[in-house]
Image 1: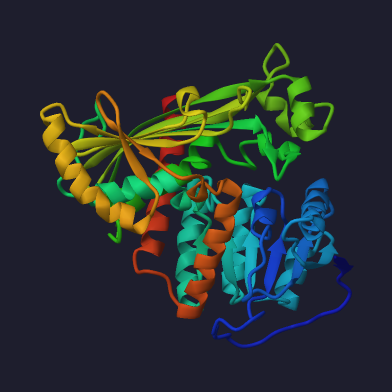
Image 2 (image 1 turned 180 degrees about the horizontal axis):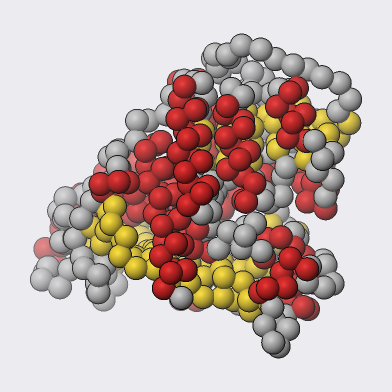
Length: 453
């Protein structure tokens, strides 16, 4: 259901969340990315079904509302969201003045996002934001200020880290805690990092069964951000979350940037139109079009850095579309003194992520198998049905389908976690400093990559 916003519903005073039904009232501000509507793919008892939307008039807000209506009218487990919509050039000012909710959801133009965050927390509103929350050093400085302001105003600013809920990433982290199986995390070197994470994404893809229509500005790196500050956010987060669980990271003392590079993906006009629905490249993309009329999008990047003495490498790549039957892919390597933990998602894995446990060269396979059987039982107790399959040089972790819920379902998991934080009135002590460290790493990598061109 969609209504038109015509009146003011101002609110005053701090709100204490108790977990009561409907006490969380969402405001969706300038939705421009499909992650905004994925937050509403499910209903939550604590969240009021009336959601206020403030946005400029645009095809993106039309698509957002259409997808929410699609969720409302689907046959299986339909939602019941009531969208109260205001569109106009003063959408931000009106949202701040009317305060029709207590949690702002952000997923859209990344050039504007950090300012939206700052304005919202300064007004005493909680924020659940899609990544990235900062795409350059100027944004990063403002984001640090926003976290300070959020703390002073007793509101929670949190980014949507869906990859923490992907089962192979969870299991990789779990196995790292098994002392006989994994051992100690290797320090690595610049030439041979002990942690490597690589992600391959695609411009043309399907979401919720429909072709994803990306806005033209998505291909302007000044608005969307370069690849090295976008998808890398997830990869940097996973390194911190899995290698140093519960550890507060001080970006000024615990991080050393070593090197970074970037390179473009080319799109012709036909591909651009298929993705955006727009026939010609907009004028603001003119500087990125080469002599052959191909749009060069700086969507790819690589960075090497040291975190708490551990060498890490992060790589992100974007292609036009995936091979038949494939989708976005993830590769992860974490080296311990006793074994390496490897996630692969290629053709051999049916394009589904699979975790492998590979003993280190000096480890005897039969002895390792005994330790693995004993210690892995702890993981199997937490995740019943997960089994080990011995291969010639490693063990494959076989995961039942019930744990493979898909990327879209992870948005509900993040949202439920955030709702618990609201009731607690706080997040774990490490979350905020580690979010700051994460965006320091990505924006520093961008700065370094541009300097090395």
